[in-house]
Length: 126
Image (cartoon, rainbow, N blue to C red; front, side):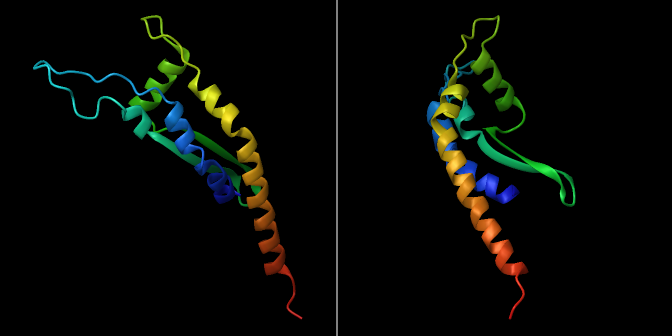
């Protein structure tokens, strides 16, 4: 289940990268551009899936978003806006609307394949 969900979400990474605002390059005291300051949010896009529970009792959660830390907080600020002047940009909603049909189709295919393989493995060899 976990790997099927991760595979179903994997193709959405380029879509989220394309929808993520690039950001402005920061400049140091000498006026030179700080390395890695523009586009670091796009590079932080990731897919995670996690099984929660014990043995066979549990569920799987999948997420497409940004790596933990500063990039994750920055994405929230850009998505929702701040009181200090960052205007909200709904890039996560755009991404969700673009990928939701494809993710459900891919997840359906992956789970059907996994079910078929499990049935084949558990069938008695006659």
